[in-house]
Image (cartoon, rainbow, N blue to C red; front, side):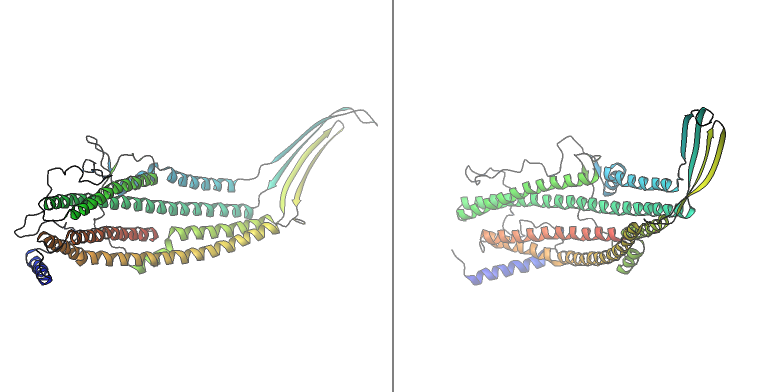
Amino acid sequence: MTRPRSRVGAALACAGLSLAVLLPPATAQTRPGLSLPGPAPALAPVPAQAPAGSQPAGATDTRAIPPAGVPSAGIVPPTYTLEQLVELARSQGPAFAASRARIVGAEAGLVTAGARPNPELDLQAGRQSASGGSIPGSTGAFGVLQPIDRGSLREARRAVATTGVEGARAEASVFERDRIAELTLRYLDVLRLQAAARLAEEDLSIAEQIRSRVQVRVGTGEAPRFELIRADAERLNAQRAVQAAAARIDVARAELRRRVGSALPADFALVGSIEDAVPAPPPIDALRASLRSRHPELSAARAALRNAEARLALERERARPTFAVRAGVERVPEVTDARIGLVVQVPVFDRREGPIAEAAAEVERSRLDLADRELQLGQALEVAWQRHQIAIAQVAAYESGLLSEAEAAVRVAEAAYRFGERGILDFLDAQRTFRTLRNEFNATRYDLRAALVELERLRAESE
């Protein structure tokens, strides 16, 4: 018997009033139940199996599938916190080892820059025949050439090597920050997907409860068979969501292991949750000041500028005359000659104009690159700060009312469906809306933590 529309509205209004009086306020962590205080029984899993043919073709039962990321029974995987993953990557990751090797190579350049030139030795031997009154016998000559290493030239080489070491260390710090930020994002991504997988499993359980309840109503003639078809489709979608969530977790875990390195076993568990509290970042003014003064990327750009200036000074030193001392002894049977002299290389034709111009252009390029890095990092800091503020506002909106209102709508729709005031479509739509908001809430939590990771990457190291 169809009720008038006025009775439908009155029933919904009464249900909403009773919710406001009887139910406690919902929180972001509250899971919407499938029962409402009242005379009607609550929806609960029905142990009886569905009749043959009631499950749509292609549907698979995922209740026997273990949760995503959970190892086989009897095997306890090692657990890791974020700090342990970072330390593992630093100590055993090949990328970090390669970055440290570049520093060692740059430090070896200091030894090369301080080395003095080697002498050149010249040994000759011969024989003189008797002709023109000369005395026959053996002859020989010995000579040595020692280049003179000017102090200004040696200091210029050392300046190039020193700034190279500074740049290598700054670049290693930049690399470490970027890798740790990527690793942290992958860690948070796994936590986000694990939370989504748990919610998908809860959705599947609810979908199975709904289908069991609808099957009873259809069997007793209280509902048309169309509602059972819709419930089957909803359960199938929930099953596919569980399977897709498990596959996404596997991909995210592989990405995390790629960032950490092969030292992280393939089977591992993570400590933490996407719901954990997050610390507040420093004030934006403090972040701006520390970024301009001590950020590793700017330190690397400044070291590159100093290195280019040192190379320009070195090329100018190389354009000056060079000196070498030559000494030698020549012996013939009747006489022995000893000589000493000075060799001067005068830059008449090659004045190193090309290398000097190249070095000057590199100085200008490095100066412009430093200005660009200052601009880019400053803008990146502003964007990350705005993302953080937006994420905070969105999380507060979800926690203050959006989720509780959607949950209340699910309860009202359930009550209306149970009392016959609404069909299964309204109930499923309310459930779907709540699931969407809940998944968006998890995504917003991830966005908040990702913004904090970027702020941490942009924050300068403490002195």
